Amino acid sequence: MPTKIPLVNLAAQHEALAVEIHAAIDSVIARNDFILGDEVAAFEAEFAAYCGARHCIGVGNGLDALTLSMKGLGIGPGDEVITAANTFAATALAILQTGAIPVLVDHDPETCTLDPRKLSAAITSRTRAIVPVHLYGHPADMNAISAIAVEHNLLVIEDAAQAHGARYRGRRCGTLGRAAAFSFYPGKNLGAMGDAGAIVTDDDDLAQWLRAARNYGSTVKYRHVVRGLNSRLDTLQAAVLRVKLRHLEEWNQARRGVARRYQELLGSCAAALPTARAEVEPVYHLYVIRCPHRDAVLAQLQQQGIGAGIHYPLPIHRQAAFGRGCMIPQPLTVTETFADQLLSLPIGPYMPDEHVQEVALALLAALHSEVADRTSPPHAASVPDGTARM
Image 1 (tube, rainbow, N blue to C red):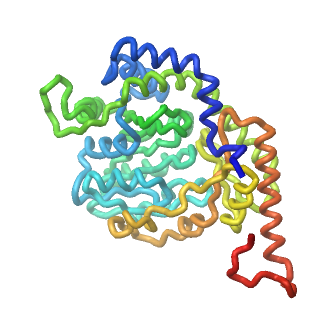
Image 2: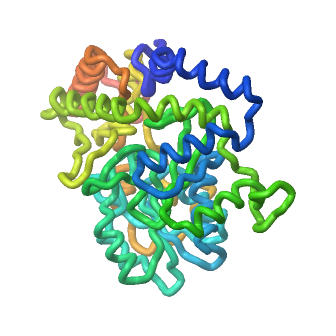
Image 3: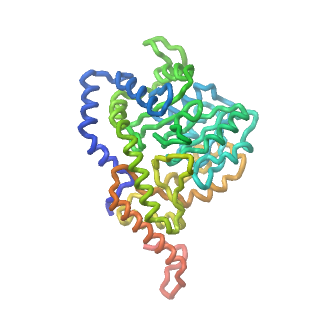
């Protein structure tokens, strides 16, 4: 059945902003200002101000934002960098691209963000940094993480790829560590119309290094002061991001409204719903529940045209590309348990309430159906265990 309620509804967003976006793109085309143009500098200034930071350096994507942040702070071969096992591949890839070793720890079962209680046992004489991930748009417990980092003289680099506009104790994500990496992948709360990313920091020296490193190591044409790469925020994407940034607060508020409605409609169901701690203001990049019989429930939702999904089906240590390249100082009990239960429901700023209700009703029916199937006594015509049900 065709999807009638998408997991992410970019079409509605772009339809609403069509006039503004086309005008911004046409302006760049008229100026032939495509590489590190005026729109890049303008977006960098506006996003830095939005976050409450001194600097924003636009780069090609979120992976490069993480990698360059770590390289610029001196992380390299032989170093160890602690992060959560339940994250998108880019977090671990960035650590590996510096030559460092990802050290994976478990996450807090309440927030799905890195559990500070698991950090001390993961720290060795080679540990250089902690990379907390503000997963699903819920800030990590930064006070506790930062206290441990200070005690052991470690860097803190935020993976804020899903947390545009989220607040922790009144401060925006992006200003809670030495640097923060953002992705503007199209489906993010603030998304471009292609790949894009940025680093936010208050560190003047790091910002200067990053501006050169993203541009072949050059700030003056044909003069290369560091060994850089080509990872420049595209001017067309910066123009689109400037348009969307003006709407970000409104969109985040709408996402919180959808989350509240899910809570009202699903509060008594068999699934575990996401919760927000009192000291944070999440932005619900994703609305991720934890439910029994996840795969069967997902199949039922998709059969009804509801674009539910899984973020992420395999944690880092179970990925073929990373397993042997990572260190795991303690069992990842929560990560392993949750991996087969997490289910992402549709959410977005343009999601009408009737769609929220339809998703909730379909989920309740699917959960009830699965419970009934597994508690009903067998009968003569029952399907043998292990045989797929149609």
